[in-house]
Length: 214
Length: 243
Image (cartoon, rainbow over the protein chains, first blue to last red):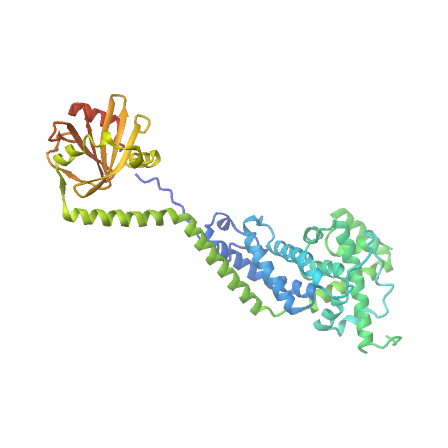
């Protein structure tokens, strides 16, 4: 007599992979055949983050294309070791590590910040020459991108991962290989640098005249 | 004024509940801290709100193509490594079956005379022509021999009236035995079925007792200086039937 036990194995559906990029049990018990499909589904959702981060790090479309592709391939090869928690943070960590280890040396110009003090951040509001409303209301994306490019790399990376990709300090620390205190400091200083860069860009481009009565 | 680092951490949701409450209490009474908080929030808002997603469809398509290629290579690699033995066996089977079928076309049964002619030859098998023990063991294991009971003394490939077989000279607890293992089922003249058993038994033309039986689609013939019943008992022990 049949025991009445049956096992079915199927690929995870999009619903089983929830909005946070977590994988459902079906994938954990899925066949190897489904590796590519399940990886591709998750990677497609976060690819704009991978590419955007690559572009903002390399500041070159051509290099960003190479970096993003290589990150995807490396992630696919390491997919068996993915712990199933946060796919986006995991793949951005691979992207960042790849950039630091391989692409950073290709970057032109002395963009590296020098000494860092982990526990100090100057207030940005007291330095501000232009009130926020005046500065930010007229800014468009391309101008923000341009200002971001002038921020030294370590600080730019920390700010992008925090404010654009909404990663936690711990996830950023894991991705960049620095202590969490350094991440905290870099984010604070990076935002202050960006603010100054936006101001100087606005003044240079004539959006706002220095000393203008605001 | 509140330490700006704490204000950044506050807005980033990186503080504990108690730390958050402390910050909120201080913000109530500190104008400079509130201004700093607003400045930080403005930068966060502009980064999140003004940066637009970069066009990357072509790059994603290139990624998909690379994944597809990697998967194809993985699959073919897995297939080759997983089924290479099956492929090799398949080729061997085609060769053996093909050869056997061509022989069957010429001959359908083996005479006991041929078997008799073979008896004695096994005793004279020279080491130079002998099969390795590994091959002899493999042949016996494919007919479910109880290898712990059999000592292989010698073995070689032979052709009997056009049929390929492996001749083995072995020893069990009752002494030496000779046997032939045919890769397919074969018919033997003058060996007749023994009712209630899996065996056919008879004599060779030289009055040697012989029995035959089938295991896994192969025919085994055993000879020896033993009675037919002894041969069948030996076969029971040396080739136990598994149901």
